[in-house]
Image (cartoon, rainbow, N blue to C red):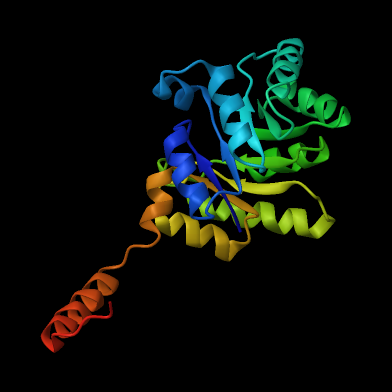
Length: 217
């Protein structure tokens, strides 16, 4: 499973790139607002930091506006994936933009039917929002499983990009189900390395090593 980092924090992206944990980056208006930076400036910088797809979201709600904004953000890097919402206007924009050769990430997916429509429209990525479904006492992973089954049934090439990831368990669950990509905040990716038994075992090893009075160097 590919790891995309869901952030506009370039320092956090750089740290994870150094560890080989970045296959791409996703951003959205909320993350751009949090960064306090100009949207074009930060997306252009991120696009230069990684060879993987960088999702840049349009904010227009009409077809013509999405196309115009999509063309504009596509200028920021050869690896830009234009992000459009899963609405009829968004699906129409997806069809047009993919026909022009652009990568398109169709976002805000909450049902298997929506995912099927996005695949038919030629989406590069479909972004089902796991955490927001969990907030409604629905199992977001069930949606990932349903989309996986449908896409495999018909050989759709649209990649399942598990989004709204809230925990390390979300990451492993998405991987087990077969999501192609999971996008998560930097802190969630870092938490994947944590386990209390690892800490306990390391502490025991270090105490025993100290008792030997030896040094490797």
